[in-house]
Structures are given as C-alpha cells and as structure tokens.
Length: 119
Image (tube, rainbow, N blue to C red; front, side, top):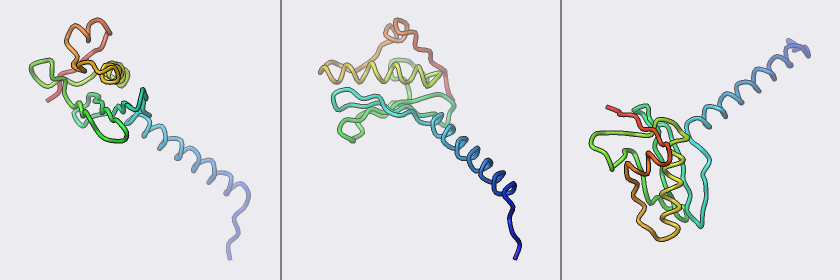
C-alpha cells in the first residue's frame, strides 16, 4: 500500500481550493445574485450572444425575461452586467410601484446604460 505524505495532501488541498474558487467566481460572472424589492427580484445573466440580459421574478415566478432591448430596432443587449442590473432594477422599481415598467432610450441615456448590438 502506497502512503501519501503531508506535502502531497497539502498540494491536493490547495489545488482543490483554487479550483473551487474558480468555479464559484465563474458562476458569479455568469449570474448575479438577485436584487430584491417588495417581492420582486432581478437576476442578471451573460447571454450566448455575448451581451447581458436580465430576468425579473415576483414570488419566484418569472415575469420578464429581457433578452433584447425592445425599445430599439435590431437586437441589442446590455454591454455589461452592471448595465443589465441598472436596467432591471429600474424596471423592478417601476413594477413595485404599479407603474409602466417599459424603459425608453431616454432612460438608457439618463442612467448611463450602455447597449451592444448582437447577431
């Protein structure tokens, strides 16, 4: 029977820890923990086209899956996770107040939300 020494076990633990942290970081880059307000919450996610999208839930039920920005001609998504989060939070706040949740190009300009055209 081959015995493992402390050095081998230590290296294995370090590698396992690094791998675990990389996986957690990668998941965090793909999906943001949600922002909540009055039963609504926003989840941002990296899209397959390269931009960012957001989903809005109320009481665990999906209300809005915003894959593309509907206010513009063509297919646009949010440039960064931060931009998707800002837009989703603005929509969520409007929903929680009972207002029309739609965002306009003016909203994007006023809130410095950047968009990217996707295929």
